[in-house]
Amino acid sequence: MDKKLNIKIYGVTTVGPKGQVIIPRDCRPEFGINIGDDRPIITIDNIAFGLPNPDNGDEICEDGELDEKSIDCFGSVKIGTKHQFVIPSEIRSALGIKSGDSLVVIGKEGEGIGFVRNDNIDYFFAIIKKKLSSV
Image (cartoon, rainbow, N blue to C red; front, side, top):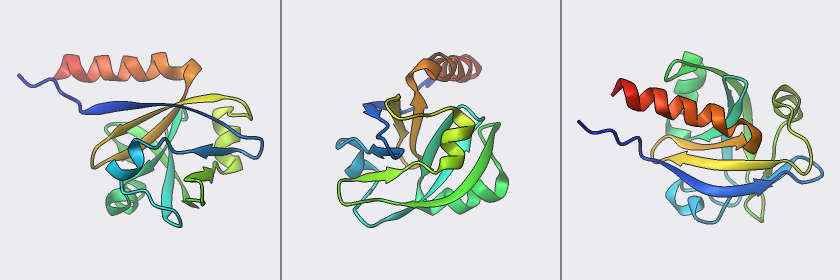
């Protein structure tokens, strides 16, 4: 029985004064994130947000669901010169994200990267535990 989820934690990033975050260096090449890219942005169960792989971002938005989680799509964000992007104000408001908050950066190869407020990380680990127990 293979209980591998292939989810990796890339570190922590801090929300800047205008809602900007920097994508950690380690995950940029793994997810093909380059300066000037437009990436779809979604929220997951009103607890986290993410940048899905551009190849399946439209598909996820059309389905409105990912692994039984509710998905809301918020268009796209442009990756800036320092590998940063601004979290849309609607997402910051919905998830209670404010300047100075720490976000844990997670990723799954081929799927995309996600950002979870560090005070919501227990919820994330509960999801992993549930997934592992059902495998």
